[in-house]
Image (cartoon, rainbow, N blue to C red; front, top):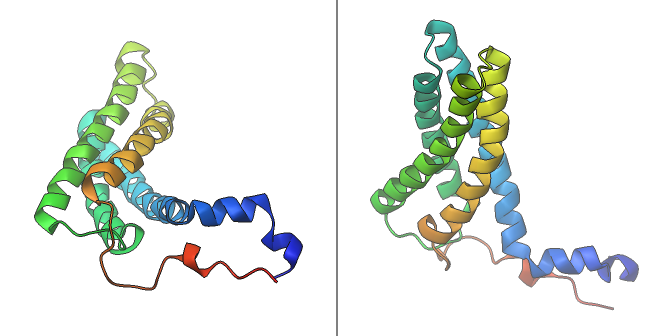
Length: 166
């Protein structure tokens, strides 16, 4: 690696924040997949029924199952395991708070502001609600579900692999 690149402040910051950066990137990938599941199920249910809050609740339950599996097995795999039952219950509880954030955005848009089109419902639930809910989820999953520590499996953290200076 060229010395100039190795001394880059961005590279140093990346290695300093190593596990957080990797977790955040993986969380984004898993979240994107769960979002596509959520979006697809939400719009399918909206097509079948005229109940946007019920549709969002059901689509979130399906997407949460996908997200838990991805986050446990990939995003936070290096963190301590405290039991699937405990993690799954906390994950769903905290995801429920994220759902309430999205539902609040949807309810305000749909019922208070009277923006009742499918586009408006999607923007309220899947843009505004998603940004606010995702921020809460990442913070809370790291804090309460996937606890600090190492699972004892897998390769060492990338931050330990910083190439030596020459």
